[in-house]
Length: 253
Ligand code: FPP
Image (cartoon, protein in one colour):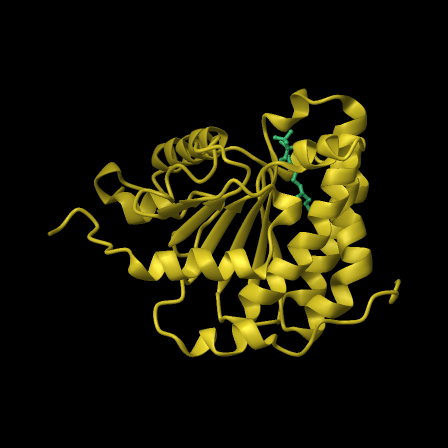
């Protein structure tokens, strides 16, 4: 284990007062976009953006935890990201291991529980091992749930859920009449998690890109032009303040 970096333990002045506020989003989901452009703008290889992005994950997790966010779901690798050059894919797949290697002690110190959603079958063995270790080490923590979407795609998730539903119906473990939205949700990777209240996407793109399609039916969206490696606590607070101004009607009046 490397302990090169100091733990971030104390709450920052900016977030210290915010957890007192009501209406902090319970579940925040983030599409961390713009790493490649951030690097290219600096004449660096794209992977430099991903590396920088990993450190932002640490800072944002800390800020979210300080503000009493309960779940932070981060889109780290989509089912479509396999189309990228193999060197880039390999690099991104090494990041969870590196993140865990460097920051796991800090996550434990801050009572963070690490989990993942996505299809772990196709993930490289070394990534799986590191993630399994982090999950095991943090499984009893009851602070922030830091939930990495790894090899995640909503359509795949829904399709797999549907197959399991059909198989349970066939095996008479589930009756078609008993299948409702709540029951169906139990077949998704996000079983047991509340839906995201706020979804943030960086880098100016304004689309969901196959992320949490079912779960974000009533989620508030917040977009920023800022590229993920430049994202920070101030922007998270800005997003929360905007969220607090929204009126969530869930289809009612
Ligand atoms: C999107 O930016 C980013 C990704 C596909 C990778 C995201 C990964 C991280 C931020 C690091 C994750 C850290 C851990 C601990 C797993 P892009 O490459 O599509 O950027 P571009 O649109 O500018 O090309």
